[in-house]
View 1 (cartoon, rainbow, N blue to C red):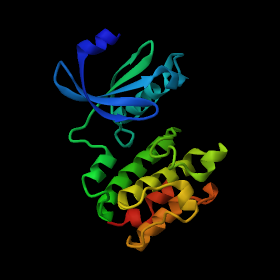
View 2 (tube, helix red, strand yellow; view 1 turned 90 degrees about the vertical axis):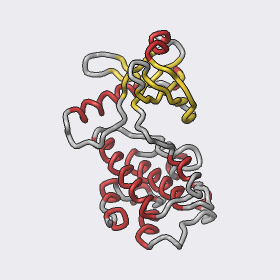
View 3 (tube, rainbow, N blue to C red; view 1 turned 90 degrees about the horizontal axis):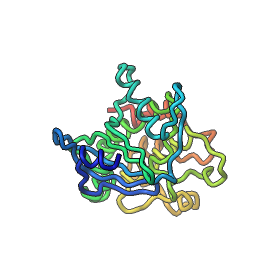
View 4 (spheres, rainbow, N blue to C red; view 1 turned 180 degrees about the horizontal axis):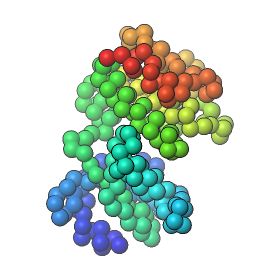
Length: 235
């Protein structure tokens, strides 16, 4: 199967790396279609048995499910498409579409002085919240929007956390980093009042962040409530 992958795709530059895998750029040789190629170590793979009894890697099962919903035009935010996957002895390789132009958010921040204007950040956050709502409707919990390790919500450390509140906290950390060029978010530092929300932001934006960072997860707003918050809803 590795040989089949190499015949069909050309792997190129490193795009990103994390605790669970590594992503490279590349292209499909038949038509030069840009692709993203993700390598996941076998020890990091969870499995799911689908309705037909097939045992699939969890990430593959999720992406196939989302692709099916999108193909049936059920109003879901279009996810990145899974083009191919190869379940090898030591790793799983996922080949996904790669929209061009595309850039890692934090690379984009670095290229723009470390932060963005509120209006530009709002465009990104609207897309992120909409996508998180779509995933929640499908009972899919994305645990790594921006969560490990210093961005984890307080309840993470007690191992008693739930999807919705955790996702809301993660969304808050993304917005914080998007708007603050001089501070790196850290949950423990935030709880000790050593990291704070900038008072130069609009009052609605400050309120949005404060609500995301509600310490008690039961008091945090839902994703649907975030989507209609005055800061996100206004033009």
